Length: 156
Length: 156
DNA sequence: TTGATATAGATAGTGAAGCTATGTAAACTA
DNA sequence: TAGTTTACATAGCTTCACTATCTATATCAA
Image (cartoon, rainbow over the protein chains, first blue to last red):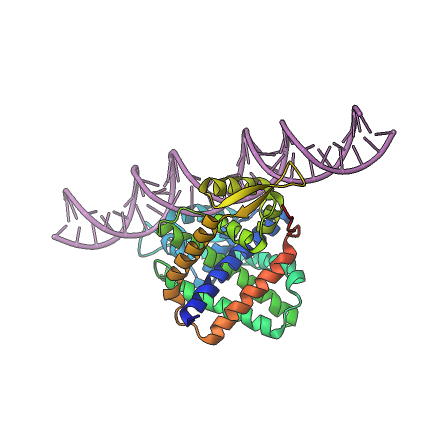
C-alpha cells in the first residue's frame, strides 16, 4: 500500500468515525432534554474563537449558506447569546459577537457534554489523549483550508 | 488541571472538530454532485462491518430510530444496494444485507471522498497519521458502548 | 387451544436545519 | 447620478431526523 493510499483509507475512516460520533452526540443531548442544536453550539464556538464576524463570514466559517446563518443568528439573538454590533464601515452589515450569556451557555453545554462522555472515555491513556489532541489540531488546521472563504476579522 | 479535566476538554474539542468536519464533508460532497446522504453511507458501512442485520438492530447500530432506518432501508433497496433476506426464525422480520452493488457503491464513494480530502491532508507526517488512526480506533470502540443496544448477528 | 400481551417493522405526521432563488437597501463605480 | 454590486433578509422547498400509532406475527398463560 502506498503512502497516499494509507492516508486515503485513514481519512475516510476518520470521516465515518466523526459522523458516528456526531450522530451519537445528537441523540444523547436530545435524550438529555437539551433543546439546542449542534449547529447552535458550532456557531457559538466559531464566534468564541474568531471574535465578532459579519453574517456572511460566519456562514463561511461554519460551512453553511448565508440564509442558514441568518436564521441561526436570529435564534441566537432571541436567546441573548449573541449581539449585533453596528458595523461602522457598512450600514448594510453588522458584526455578530458572542455575549457573556452566550459564553456561559457554551461553557455549560461543554461541561454537560463532557460529563456524558466521560464515563465512556474515562479509561484513556496519556498516549490516547495525545492522539485525540493531535487529531483535533489537525482537523482544525486542515479544515480551515477547505472553507470556501477566509475568516476575516473586521473592526466594528 | 486534573486528568479528568484534561480528558473533558479534549473530548469536547473532539466533538466540535468532528461536527465541523462532517459539515464540511456534507457541503463538499453535495457540491460534487453526490445525491446520497451521509446516513446512506453510514448505513452501508455498518452493514459491511456487521453482516446482515434486522432493521431494528441496524437502527441501533447506526444510532437512529427504527422508523428512520425503515425509510433508509427502503431507499437502499430501491437502489439495489441492499437486499432483504427472509428471516427463517421470525416472519415479521427480515435480514438486511449489503449487495455487491452496494459494496461497489460504498467503495466508490470512499474513493471519491478520499480524493477530495487528499489535497488538503496530503502533508500528513507518519506521526499525524498514527494519531488519526488511533483516534478512529478509540472512537469506534468507545462509541460502541454508547449504543443503546448491542449488534447481534442472526443467521438467516 | 385460545385469548391476552409483547414485539418487529411500516406508516403518518411533525419539526429542525439545510438549500436555492429572490427581494431590499446600502455601497460602489463609471 | 444612474447602473451595478454587495450584504443580508425572506420565501419556499427538501431531507432526515423524531414520536405516535398501526398491522401482523410471536409468545405465553389459563
